[in-house]
Image 1 (cartoon, rainbow, N blue to C red):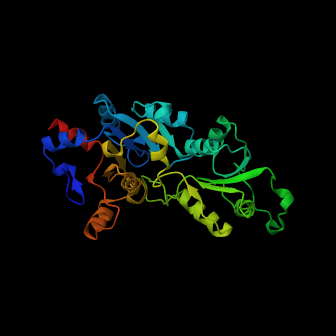
Image 2: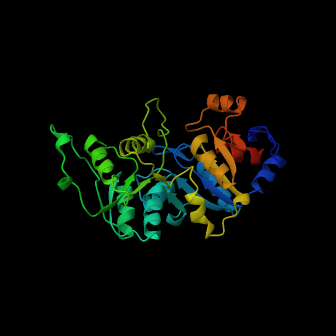
Image 3: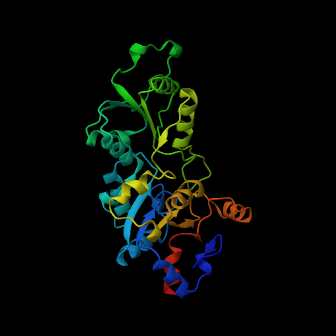
Length: 303
């Protein structure tokens, strides 16, 4: 149907929009920048997601945000007007815990991250250390092996507002052991924000640890395919799945890698100017279709 490199749904007729709606059974949607920004729903996003559900689509909220547990994400979604259950939340904090449990991990995790990851680890019986401030001391270079926990068998890096030099030292030292696992939630460069203030994302911390440890992390969040593998047991059909996102190098790339149809909205990281450039220069990955905001879809159906 949509043969153009980037097809703007706002240019489609009502029949084409209906054809688009009929082309998928499962909807995977990013959250920050697509459905909400900070604690404010993007106008029309809740109505559109709830409409997908009314049509009988399976819904999953797929977020690289690792700062909350699934029940917190579902509660936030409900408070903003979305119909959402905990089992429909696929957050990187949950994916980290699920992955470690699935491989039979029995040791401790050193966590550069937040209580969102820590609580999900605790829920599956995995101990962790490292959450919270680790203050820089005047003699920080004098850190000793006795300052480390010998039971740590994995380093997990997510978003950590308390990141510090001692944390990088500990992570890199743990990772000196080849037996120590190295896992990252995601490599997003920054958070979508309503203001012009730049908030560095988890990718900033992941790259720092990769640099000082001279190792590469196993990344579980978008654009990597672990989520698709996670959903395969539930009967996911990639050819009948739509991935909605606001960021080409994570959401859209994830959809392309997994064989999903992709919809880019321009309410988050990727701007109209960015889209014009990547479309003109044919910079991959390109989305299949685009909308200024997700809520515009309902107005196209109703016209």
